[in-house]
Image 1: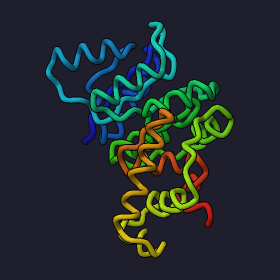
Image 2: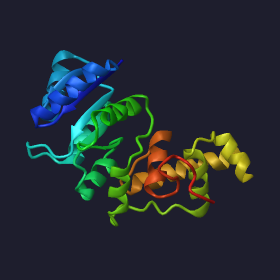
Image 3: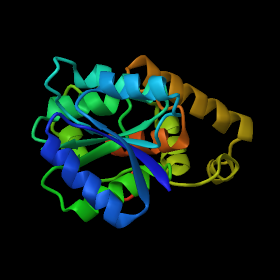
Image 4: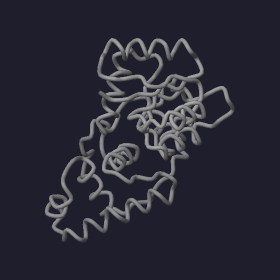
Length: 220
């Protein structure tokens, strides 16, 4: 059973999600509150480990920014799902750049929200229309300037091939493919879009149109 924290300054939203999670039986709500600060105070005060997933409102009423909230939670060890009306592309992009696993709309059915929590708790990438549209609509999304070879390596690797298979497919040495992945990660860090894990690389590849939203290579 995955542990979940709900952070939203609207109590009615939290209560609805909490009830849905209880009915579902696959998630344990261990914290429900209105700010990230409250969550961290609870966690450190109770000496509880980081939760598996934080469901976070895009904009809280305490004056904090989505970037600092997501970055703080990710650094603390949790995966973050943004629960938002998703009508502010710039803010959604900021959340993704800061490390959020994805976005689920507040207009979505509760089952869809639960599916998103389950997906992220498993460590899988969350693919949905809301965040893809937000990225597509924001022309300021930082381009990592990958070379053609780097894009091809990322396309195959992020779509699921082991790095050894990527090297064989492209007719290059394993060390060369590994070096390409390292350079790709460095480039994404340099533009403020870190990708430390394979799931993160899949997310970046989808954001940049290298891999389709369903995780399938988009061409090449």
